Image (cartoon, rainbow, N blue to C red):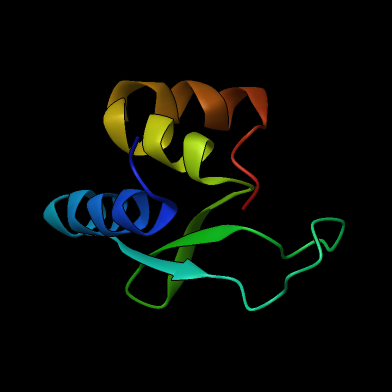
Length: 76
């Protein structure tokens, strides 16, 4: 089984290859609005994802990003 830290590192490398930087929220309360992962390009937030699984899916399927934005699921 893959540890959470290994998944985070793999996601960070995938994001970097795609020109993004990942920022993990310092908030530890899952009910807080800013809890989760912030995908950045430069100083601009591109996406906000609640958990590592969502982040991995977002990074793995670039074509779905435009569909998410059209549906309003991007969480910018």
